[in-house]
Amino acid sequence: MKSIKLIIIASFSLLIFGCGPYSFTGVQDLKADTFQVNYFQNTANLIEPGLDRDFTLALQDLIVNQTNLILTNTNGDLVYEGEIVEYRISPTTAQANSTAAQNRLTIGVNVRLFDKYNPDEEFEQRFSFFFDFSGNAQLIGAQKDAAHEEIFERLTQDIFNATLAKW
Image 1: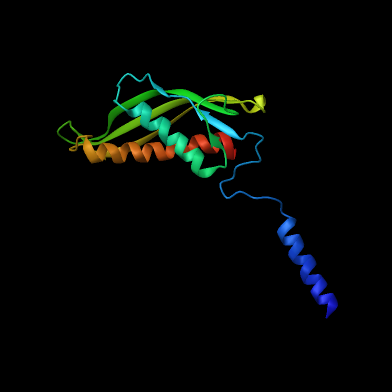
Image 2: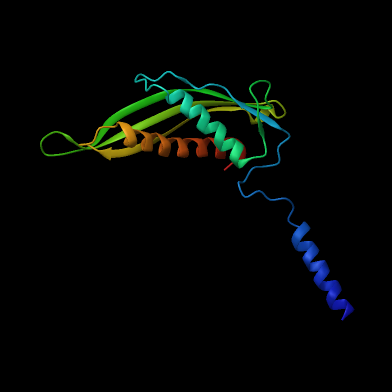
């Protein structure tokens, strides 16, 4: 009876402590405690007012929600910066009367990451994503907000995966 209890305790201990710490977001152990996201300037040919602010806030929110890092305005251990380099609406499919059956909004951002404790992990990369909408619809109001939200969700997750989750 004593040996069964000992085996159960040993098995449970190995199960709990043997695998080491795990993060459901995939974030590796970081030496960093803080991060900052510098303002992403909009340098695209087509300027959408407020897009730069909204993207910067979306990236900050995602990192705050998926890590234990503390957001700071200056002197962050990890520094994200970059610019919005593409905001483009283009037809994707045509109809017989030479009009677009479907349009695509594409947003592209160039991102640089600086890591105070691990300079080898620093990088610069371009990310982009799109949202398709009907050729009869105008990209205004709620549809524009939904498009931006969907694109930001994908862009920020891709940036997070490339910089912190290493996926």
